[in-house]
Length: 352
Image 1 (tube, rainbow, N blue to C red):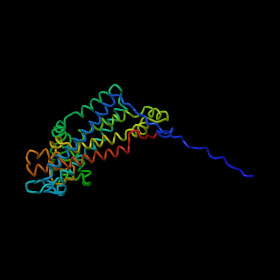
Image 2: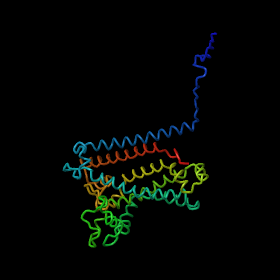
Image 3: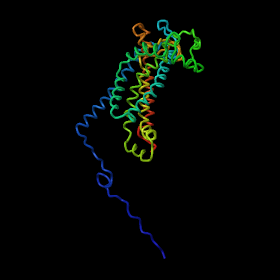
Image 4: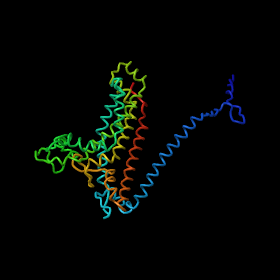
């Protein structure tokens, strides 16, 4: 007996002049005029920002060309500043800029993290607005005020005190001088006759001043991100038996990871470009100074402020070239921050 199978059902879809009948229809969204206006303003604002940044880069590049033609890539490796003699470069101040930023971020991030976490999670409701306003007010203080504070109070009254230079720099040089970063050349911290001037106007002091400037900015960003952690996930952590710190560790911190990174990078960008505070505190030198406790150092922005009124011709072009390098370093920092944040979105994951 022969068994024949039935033909499979037809899957043919009748067509129409517009296409198959079951094809997805295009939904046209009609935005109200207010949405269209907001979209246009936002797009125009973003375009203007990019255009301004491009114009700044073009301006710096144009004015820096004479210096680049004369110095070449040696501009990044030369440890001298004599534009009229043809021997100039930013190796010393470039390293100083990075060291000041490193010191500032090393101090500012723990302070900002603790302050933001306390305000968002532990502070009583009645004093929380006061603390928020105080942090925001610190961010609005002009940098010259921080520079004066560092020059006349922080350094002589708190860090390098008395004829013996007692304070944190001397303590670090005494017990951690075996680390090259904390070593001070031609200075014995255990010598009672050692002069304290070797510990003043240093990269460490300048970094602390800059740290006080960037701490409020980083703390404000972290606090905003921490306060936006989802309430449902917070309550879920408590329902599973988590303590206060357990909830923070498993919910708040994973949610705020991107904001923490973004705030840190924003503070680093501010630290690298700080001018007046560093200019008032530090003694600018043009050689690579890797010892952060030792007198002397510098930054690119402080160099520009120091020499802007003096250098002409090639000297002015050299200052513009230094500004172009700082501009490029800042862009690299911000682009790197954007990449890291995109890989670590706030709220992307939690441990609950």
